[in-house]
Length: 296
Image (tube, rainbow, N blue to C red; front, side, top):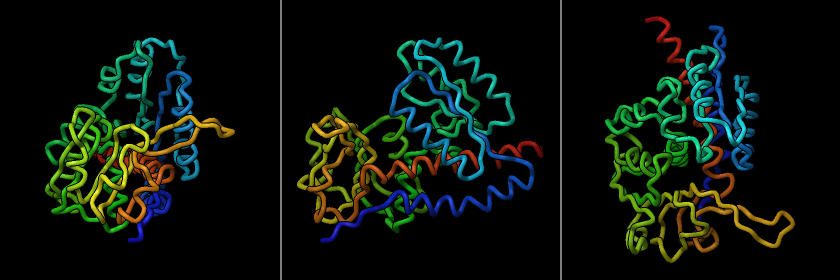
């Protein structure tokens, strides 16, 4: 069996193409979708990720500004900045880059964001809307998983989907999305995690497996059935003896999946580009919502 490699770059390029007319409509109304990013500390992966987001916004003619805080910044200073951004009409979306330093409670910070500007979809109000099947902003990575399947005509309806990982950022919202009674969803979902015993029992019965566990090369070819689809959210830095001193890998052991899986997402260049594309789309939606609200 030949394994199809699902390119996040190709799929995200299609998303950006579809968004250009919506951007033009907004700009014709003197609205430039704007994103405010709060970056706390000097975490290198976070910095690189924020830089990638900023470049994409600039490429599309959108507005993005990053507000940098030192690693010892107080929670009060972050909350004060978010309160200011909530009132600033130049920014339709607000994103707080995770993880945060230990002195800052991420739940308190995320809950302080206006839900109408919560383009990451992490506010309890948005998560609640998702749970009731009427989402406003869907978390970007789960949304990216759904869209890459749609792009490659992988329909989860009626299939058994196993999600490995239960975080509020990926695993839990994705398990809800996959089970919604809607087009391109409507699947039977099993949510596995670090406390699940004998995960292979579940992955071997899965038609689609989504990995968001954060364990390098955790899933191997002998743990999936022939023809399963594997969508790898994991991005892990593993030390080695190369010049860089590390290599990037996902939660799946790619080499052993080839010939066993019908389709897989690579790491990098799989779901990473889709996450950024969904952030752009959510920010555009927030700007469109702003116009609608202004009419009320």
